[in-house]
Image 1 (tube, helix red, strand yellow):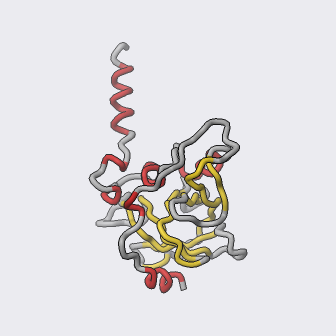
Image 2 (cartoon, rainbow, N blue to C red):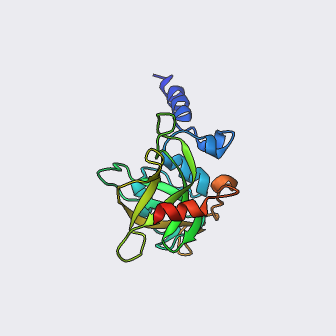
Length: 188
């Protein structure tokens, strides 16, 4: 019975491997949540769809995309646990680039990080509540429309009961030469 404590600690350590331990953030293979936390600096834990409510009173939230903000996808039939991604570029009012993990298949498997992926707002009111995401398997925007809660910004909510440090996005959040033209072609 006395061995259970050390075993649980060892197991927790193995299960909590974070992308920051990779040689590069972009070498990461795993779930979207630890990747988004490492890429954005926003310290929220739990399933992706829970981030929106968890951010309330801790981080500012809104519907305007900003570089370094986390976009939170709602739980849906296609995304049972939701999804989180980090805004890497704002291309136009309705087109972004995101950096995220565990979306497209690469070499036949999910989980890999992808940098500067096109995401387009398809919501009727231009408020980022519905989006389409570029999908490597189709080499273009996927056909699915995903509901989105909004964006969580890296600066703490001024009304937060406890002080939070400003989140600092990872330097690898965006590439040196993102394909703006390709993003616009994908979106339109």
